[in-house]
Image (tube, rainbow, N blue to C red; front, side, top):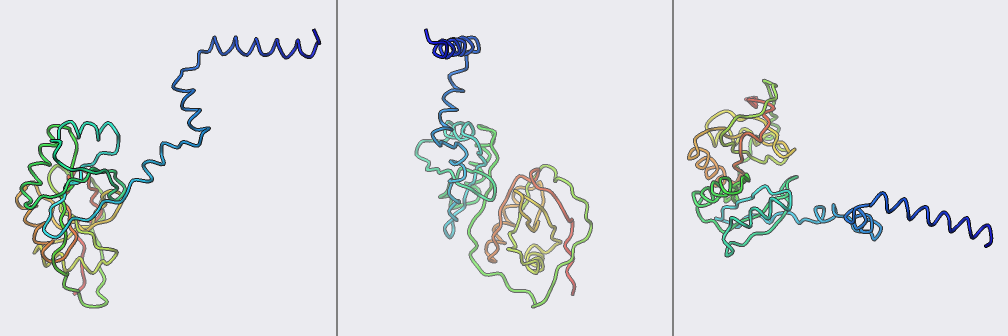
Length: 233
């Protein structure tokens, strides 16, 4: 046999012997093949659509469900007649459940999902009015900078759309101090932090009537950045 061919044959036999000893898992081979074919599992999450806003008068339940296991578990505990869809809210992948006409109904389902599947939910609704604008040029200053995570309870947050002057409007609406927090890697005004469920819902409804985009979230997932936002007179 030609020495070159003999050398190639020897290397081939040696390579097969090594592969047999290593026993590469089939899953790894398939995964590698998928990558070679241009399949990118992360692209599915990047292509997740943004959640559709609630209709006027509708309360929306957004169940935080970032993994396939979370989504499967949620489907197991929900009746088949309930329509759901997976979407992006802020930086979270959530399951959107709409159609609630009363906040109490949305809350009952949020509690049921928490107890049955161990998943947290966000409750929100569509603003029905327009916030009364503050005086032009008003700027908010913040004090008491002691970042800390809130304890158990309910936090009512307001998206201020990078307009700090809205803090004075929120303060008038809730008749109390307004804080500054971070939730889902985004800043919000803290309208209310309470263990009283009814109080939280009443605050959400009042803010929505006045045209603010407000949400109720699990307060333990909220980072308090400023306890009070001070506004110059």
